[in-house]
Amino acid sequence: MAGAGSTEPLSPRAKLAVTAGKAAAAVSRAAGRGSGSVIGGKVALRLDPDLLARLAGHLDVILVSATNGKTTTTRLIAEALRASGPVVSNALGANMPAGITSALSGGSDAKFGVIEVDEKYLSGVARDVTPKAIALLNLSRDQLDRAAETRMLAEKWREGLSGTKATVIANCDDPLIVWAASSSPNVVWVAAGQEWKDDAWSCPSCGGVLQRPGDDWGCGECGFRRPTPSWALNGDHVLDPHGSAWPIHLQLPGRANKANATTSAAVAATFGVPPQVALERMYQVQAVAGRYDVVDFQQRQLRLLLAKNPAGWLETFSLIDPPPTPVILSVNARGADGTDTSWLWDVDYTRLAGHPICVLGDRKLDLAVRLEVAGLEFRVCESVDEAVQLSPPGRIETIANYTAFQDLRRRVGN
Image 1 (cartoon, rainbow, N blue to C red):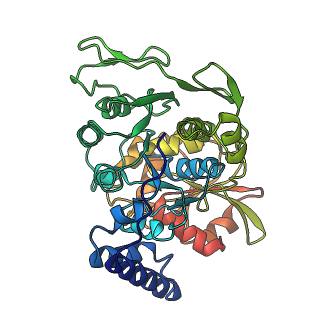
Image 2 (image 1 turned 120 degrees about the vertical axis):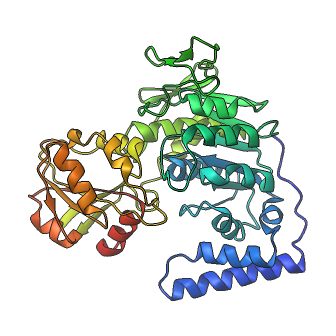
């Protein structure tokens, strides 16, 4: 893989933009309005619209995009690549151009830029930063009021990445990802799995019905089918292109994070970091922006879990402790969540049978109706304080979508 680009100093205009952006971010933090990364990036880009490209010029940039798992995978890749040099990354998940610009403004001494990118902005950011690698994990329904339908999004990726010079590391088990990546001349296929299949039964190439025997898939009408992977998740091991099996030891729970580690190992190998070294470094990651943290609150332990869409809820249900472990569910529908909550009806909440359940959040009544139809018993609560008081003894699994998760973190002091 080629080395980093030139290290030409920033122009006076770019320096002014960076300084102004950092000042705006500091004011936002002082006012208690979050990290300030978004407002800082917006100010900087207003002063220099080409700043993102300038800040990325000296970096080996890796972009990570998906519906689920991109924040965690970005963190795992960053840890792995630190074996080869300093890394700058938008570790807190501000993944649109303003947040990415803000993150890169602190990376003047970095070698690698590991950047999570919102699905809608992937093609545009790729044009700006000329990445050396792009990791594509999965596509499923999410924020349908804001983002395109998944088939349309895959087509936009396919058009935007056509002919890219980047190495694309892509999940061959997701037909939409395969369709999006297939326009790229240099693809490394990873068998990372696909638990949620409800958005991938029709062929993205011709619209025919996909046949999905076991882990394989293919279209009997046009011949579009699953590529042969070079890397694969196999139980608790990563299989590399030479057939060697490397053990995965993570502090992060669940099969989905093993899949994220597999993709991360493939990305790291693209930059010369051996799988053993990459996977050992990933063990250091205990939590990602509060996800999976266990916190003490009102003399109880709460595990904080993020689930934003049907695919994410499915993965989360697979890793919570069994009944009678109490569960708190919280759902909002603010701008960052997507205001359309119709996705609640695609989640199989019967998997929570036997768990004592409390529901809260801006859309707690929407969630309550969904749970009632699923035949579950639950309590509607006004706050996490009330939900904790009503929950029976034991550690509480707390599952929330994006802004509800941030609300919970602020309240429980995480």
